[in-house]
Amino acid sequence: MASCITNIEETILMTCGPRPRMSKRVSEHGIPVLQQGALNIYTILPCPLKVRFKQAFEQFMAEHNSKSATPIYCPTILDGAPKSIEAQMQEAHGEDDLPEMLITTGFHTIFSKPFKQEYLETGVYTGLTKPEFLDKMPADYRRIAAQYNIGFLAFGAWSLIFDMSVENAGSYPKSWTDLAKPEFRNKLSMHGYHGKASGTSLLLVLKERMGEKAIGQFAQNIKNIKHFAEVIKSIDSPDPDRVPFNILPNAASVQIPSRKNAAMIEFKDGPLMAPLMLFVKKSKLEACRPLIDFFWSDTFREILGKGDFHMPDEMDWSLNYSFPSWDYLATHDFTELSDELDVVFQKGLNVPKE
Image 1 (cartoon, rainbow, N blue to C red):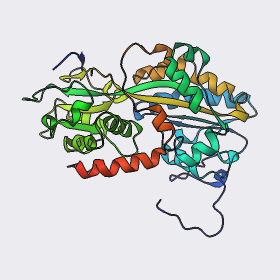
Image 2 (image 1 turned 90 degrees about the vertical axis):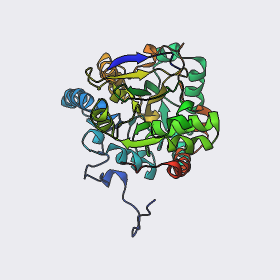
Image 3 (image 1 turned 90 degrees about the horizontal axis):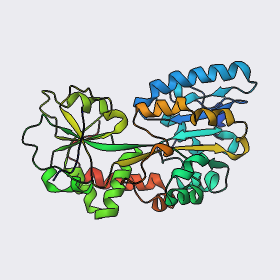
Image 4 (image 1 turned 180 degrees about the horizontal axis):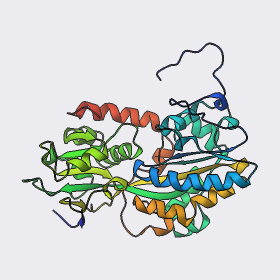
């Protein structure tokens, strides 16, 4: 792929008696969600990072567990649907029902109002940002980290990939808001949507800048919603349903083979940010120090880099980045927000989600 193009014109579960404690519960694939006596950690990472992370983290855990009386337990690398494990955090009865550490790109748990009020605003969890990272970050991000108890570990992004094999592509979008213009009808595809934090982030950006009507207008322009692997396969192929403009996480677009006739379009308002956040139980900060050190290590930094994620000290903060208002996100229930946006989005959508 060419480097870039720039400057172009509840379901309710009925139960008898109390629900089981989290330590007794299992994931939808039968994996225990917590291990008593262990340092429990949930890791919710983009798919393209999972294989490399699993290999490195399993080695780290094996070495740690062979020498420590307190083992590390990470059910999310054992289960094919780790987000379902994270979602169970919202059913916790208290601190003992929660993992000692959470690494996530998702907002549905940490920014759900009940969870946020009970476990973030009370300080049960500490959003942990390395002090050296804070020194490099803009003043507003330092404020956000302190005011809303958010730990920033790294930042990825979503961008627009242009399939240059599509003839008569027409004009090019120059910003995220351009994607809601009528000239791009049926010219867009995107990776997933519902439950994707960055998908909701894009809808919030459009709403903030153009009003709610922009969400439906954007949805009308989408021809395909597919997993990123299917989108990449379609680019520069004989697929008659391929489109010129494809919205993908950079963690996926870096996997596009160089032989493909495609390029990343750089928007004037920058890529759409995808934060990776770190939360640790305040009562377990010292016990979790080996885990914290791993996630701040060069080993994890290298894993992140393979998926175009960057720690805060690697970011060029002089550039433009797009993201919804952190103040708005932190003061609203994210699940309610995403559900409301999804209703508007679906009304304008012409294709089924895959």
